Amino acid sequence: MLAALRNSGLMRPIVVTALLVAVYLGYQAWLSRIGERVLPESALAGAAPRVDLQVQLAIEPEQFHMTRLQALGRVMEVRERVAFIADVDKADARAFARAYWIERIEPWRRP
Image 1 (cartoon, rainbow, N blue to C red):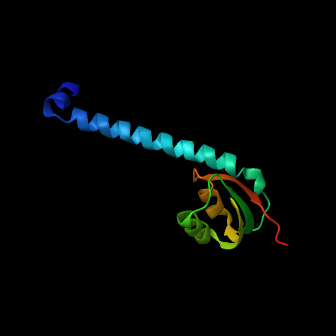
Image 2: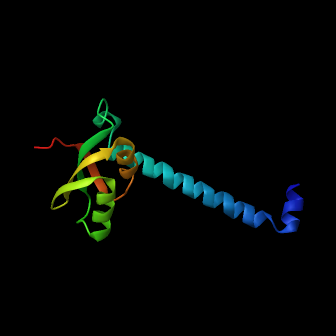
Image 3: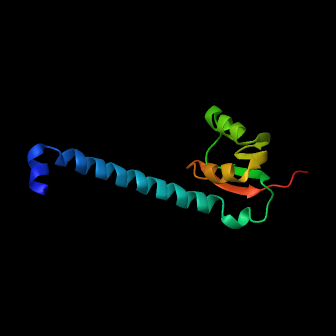
């Protein structure tokens, strides 16, 4: 069977596809580890379905980052690299934590 694959010319596309899938899965696993570090499970344990968050960015926010933050919830204030966001769905917060440009996410109590 292996010899038949080699002779048909399908071996190279199969190997390249398998490598691309492995790289993609490794990248997704890396993003998941980042997300767990940025927003630990304990940070939102016992919280309501919608939470208020303090998001520390790893870089100075630009228009793209602000658009993503606004899609996450209501941006209440931005101070340098820290954004205060209200009414964020917990599942959305966990998915958002996987972004490489997020340094830390913590619960925030509105004044």
